[in-house]
Length: 194
Image: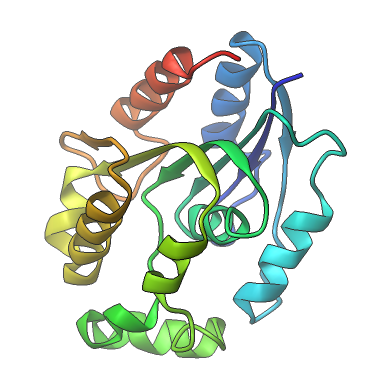
C-alpha cells in the first residue's frame, strides 16, 4: 500500500488545518497517511532524522515523504538512509555549511542555537547519498526574494537533482496559503502510481 509520512515545519503541529487539508489530499489519492511530529526540543538534526526513521512503517516499498520547511530538510536527510518513492519538499530549509555565509544574522544565530550540527552538514554529500525515485520541490516566489541562502539552496537542489520546481506566485513561507495548498493538491494528483 502507498504510504505517506507528513512532516510539519518548525514548531508546527500536523493536526493544524494547514496540514489536515494536505492529509485529506493524500487520502483522496489513495494513500495510507501518517503524520510525524518531530520533538523540536531536541537540538540536533540527526536526532530528528533518527526519530523519523524509527517511526516509519514496516512496509517501505511505496513510501512518500512530505515535509514543509524544517520537516522537508528532515525528510531529505532521511532519504539518504532509506529508499523513497516520492520525496516532496515544500520550502525546504537548507541549513548546510555551504550556505552559512549567506545566512542573515538572525537565521545564523537561530541555526547555531537550534541545530547543533548545521555547520557539519554538507549538501554535496547529501546529493551523493540520496535514494529517491521521484523528487519534487515547491516554494513561494517571495521566499527567493526574502532569503539569499534559500535562493542559492533551491538552485543547487534543482541543478543537482533535476527535480521539478513549482514556484507558487504571490506566496511566501506559507503552506497554508490558498495558492500553496492548490499546488500541493495538484502535485499529489499527479504522483506516479505503481
